[in-house]
Image: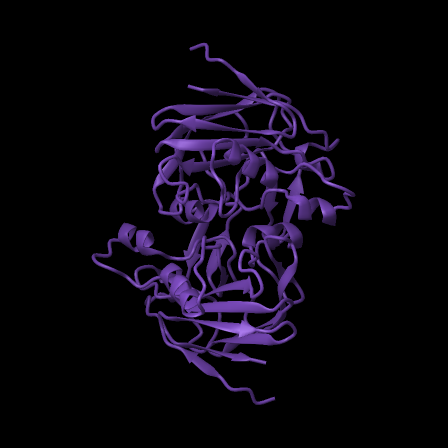
Length: 199
Length: 199
């Protein structure tokens, strides 16, 4: 199948309606770009993909191929159909926000995934009451045996992709993380474009 | 100091105002009871203790003595002053809810920490827009090197206690988890009373 690939410019986000049964393919074009992913039920955005509910239902900190991610009402939201990367994704870390960049020493406004989400949903006519923890595609936050976490550069490779099937009618938001003050997006901390398709 | 200990009956919750600088002491009276803990800024409940922000700021999946837990605006909310238990607490798992018990096979309504939170806040005149992931005192959800998680019985002992200092004026909610269909609260899955004091 030749599907149309759409570009998400470095540091920005898109929101797309994805009907139940269709899938979203996200391509890590550069190999080192983290993509924050959210999903909301189109019929009631108070039901959304929840990392803390997903961890209970899957008994994993990171979903694998065949796993579903669950909503805050414990219904399957997205199912991982394919993942060509080493499968290192994060479910534990908050999206970056103005407070994160302030603490990292930013002066003035810094683009961030939280504001990207809010703006992308507003463009769909939706005001969010709260910001769920994202599914951070390719973010490499290992949990050590001593329960410490370290955010290391992604281990994904150029062109690695993940395919996520919608189990409900969804609005999916993808934010190519603008982090350039920590090695989230690679050791040179340079945000890159990513691409996606609806299949 | 002889402070007054208050009882939280098994399976129920309390909400208490805790001014900045005071502390809440939670006692695991039986040794095997998990307590779901939330904290909201009294002046604006849209600012609340957030596990996903705490993990970024502390670089740990479980806070240790001396660590603060952070809000969704990345301000310190509670600081762990003392912990006589082995320090195994959880920040990764959603509160139990009606959907959890349905999936475990409950027929009819089952008390749960999510509804406990909502009711305790409603008793304070506050309607919550969203349910944050709780700080699950003594919940033993180990993260294995393969990223699998298993909820095992607590390793705490009768009388173990934790002291948490308020860094903002807070409403703190404590729910003695009613889970009796999984070994969250010990191998015999019997919820127990816990006790707390404001110091």
